Structures are given as C-alpha cells and as structure tokens.
Image (cartoon, rainbow, N blue to C red; front, top):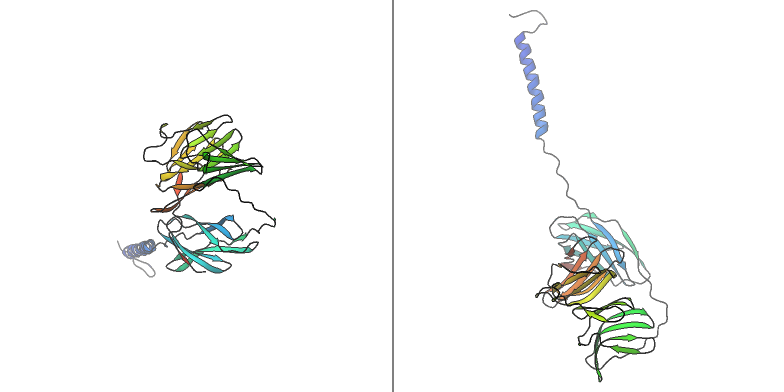
Length: 326
C-alpha cells in the first residue's frame, strides 16, 4: 500500500534513507578504525651518576637505553664535549682524567642516534678532592735481595703492617713480612715455600693470604685449603691470587683463568665468571652493594665484572671504542 500526500514520504523512500544513513555511519567508523595508530616512540632515556671522585679524575656510571644494539653517546664536561663512545652494554663506566684538584665540574651525557642527539641526562655536579696539606717524609725500606718482589700489603696501624710476596735473602726465601713499628720481621707462611699474592686482615686471629690457594691464620696455626683436592675447582681452573671480603663469612677469592670462589664462613663455592681471562683485583661495597672485579691477559685483553646484590657476576663490556675530543 502506498500513501501519498504533500509532505509525506513513501515507505520505500524511508527505508532507502535509513539504509543510506546506516551506510554513512558504518563507513565513517571503518575509516576511523583504518587510520594508522601513532608510532610508539623509542626509549632514549639515558642516566649519569658519579661513582667515585679523586683529585684529578672521576669515575662516571652511564645507563643507556636497553636497545640490544651498539649505542653511541657523548660525554660533556662544563658544556664542552670531551669524548664520544660506543658501547654494546646497557651500563658502563667511564673515567675522565686530567682534572684540576679542588674544582667543581658539571657532567652530562647525550644519547646519539645517526650522529644526532636524541636525549640527554640530567646534569651531575662533582667536586674533585684537594691535594693533601700534610708534610710527609718518605723512607725507603729494602726487603730481600735481587729477585725479591712484594704483591700486596695490609696496614693495620703504623706499628702493624703486613706485606706478602717473594723475599730472597742470604739466609733463605720468605713469602711475608711484618713491620712492628721498629723493624721488619720476615715470615715463612707454611713450611713449604710458595710466593704469596694477596692478604686480607680481619684481626690478629683471622688473617687470609693467597698463594694460588687460600691460607688462613686462626691465631695459632696456618691452614691451607687445596681447592682442587676439595673439589671446589676443576682441572681447567686457575689458582686464586686476590681477596676481598665484607666480613669473615663473606669472602671472595679471584685469580687465574677467571676463577672466583666464595666463602660463607663454612663452605667454599665456585662462582661462574663468564671469562677465562686472569682476574687480578677485586673490590666491593662492605655494606652489601656492588662488587667489582677486573682482569687482564696479554692475548685476550681486559675484562670488567660486576656483581649486584643477590645476583651473579656479569661481564661489563664497557667501552668498545672511544674517540677523544679533548
């Protein structure tokens, strides 16, 4: 049935109009949904902090965006670029040297992409240490004959100083010596001779020395811990030569072929270092912070390891290349 009249619309025309309106709405929604979503901007955040400050140098820690690729950044000192670096690790350490003592400096790092600055860190202010005003008088002591050498020392006080190494004398060979405030007393740690490399002193009744193996003094006798006989180290591992500890129940030994061993006060445990480079030095935060280990090999180069609290040691690739600008 068709109803006609002025100002009236047929049922068919109404239906067509409604369908056209629905089509327009659907087309509009479809067009809106097909618009390209905004591209997520990459993370270019970069952070800078001062790890240590000396009289003529500073150690800076740089945290780069987690890109997984080699990153480039520039170091600015007092608004002047002093160096540019490339790094494949997210966290790295850089050392700025040649500074003036007792001087203020402002540092900033800039993240570079295709040679252009994409972001920059907040400024970090440092004040270098002043040189000492004390008037020191140095004296030279000679221990042993030709062929003697010292590898480590521990100063308890001015009347109690220990040194370890290889001391050749006319009366025999020694591997340690102790200053009592008046003279050096030569010592043979254990009856069998071996040169010593490191020492860590807790008390008169708690001293650790390394000869490739750890040796402990309990106040009455020296005890050697043979890591290979104990099954702590394997045949392909190297001996330990340096020591660091936060307490007598938290001791780390590092040495040849990337060897790291931890002592908890009762048990020695081998730790993975991820490297076969000889590890030469270890230092850490006695309050439970980070522990750092460095090493060097004539053929394999250098390595830097970092251990954060409750984590394993990880290799810090550090600076792979550096271009100095001043």
